[in-house]
Length: 186
Image (cartoon, rainbow, N blue to C red; front, side):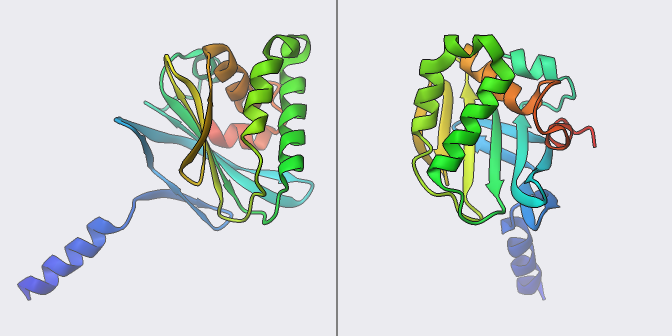
């Protein structure tokens, strides 16, 4: 009996902790990058017309609904895109990112064009269902981009991080349902 109890506890403790399930995808309570553990702030679904494209999740050091404070904070945080849709080409991904940056930055887009181009260069693979893109901001380093846990590159600067997080969280963000989910407002 004692061995059975130990086995059950070992299995229960080995299972990752998930806080929510969206579009059939498990969204973890925490993400660990280096020595930093970030907590799930919220998550939502990105749709194009009626098609579910990905689940977007926001991870912070501590939960917050204040989009302005999050965007401007110079502290570790991450956005995860967990794909639901199978088969987003690299060219479609780059085009969507470029449109999003142009829309959110307006006239300020030109000031960040080189950093946006560097960021776009990381999206050189076709994205399939269950692929994960992580954008992790690390103060003093920049925004690391990881594809399924493998680093694709880093974009330096707090200015780029602010622009990237604005794409998802700014009051005028293109996808308000996704924004509200990531901010934990839904």
